[in-house]
Structure formats: C-alpha cells, structure tokens
Image (cartoon, rainbow, N blue to C red):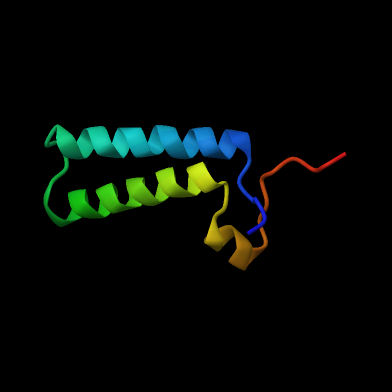
Length: 68
C-alpha cells in the first residue's frame, strides 16, 4: 500500500473523528445515525493511522507531498 493521505488530511480526519465520538458518547446523536457516525469515526482514525484511503485510490486522489 502506497501512502495517499497527507499530514493535513490526517489531522482533519482525527479532529472529525473526535467530534463524532464526542457527539455519540455525550448522547447528542443517538440511534442509527449515532452508530453510523461512530463507525465512520473509526474508519477516519484507521485511515489516518495507516496513511492510506482506499476511496482515494479508486478516484485517483493523493494528498501526500511529492518526493523531491
């Protein structure tokens, strides 16, 4: 797997995951929507940790800086 998620993208994903987790665990969002947000937060954390997003590969996106 070649990295395709840059540092800024990783930070944004982690921040969004934290917000989604807070919304779920404080009870602001619940039910099915809350579970979907929680799963999405997990995906964001996982993709930011491994610096690889399969959807980016499918559409040809790459937010990593170019090697010089």
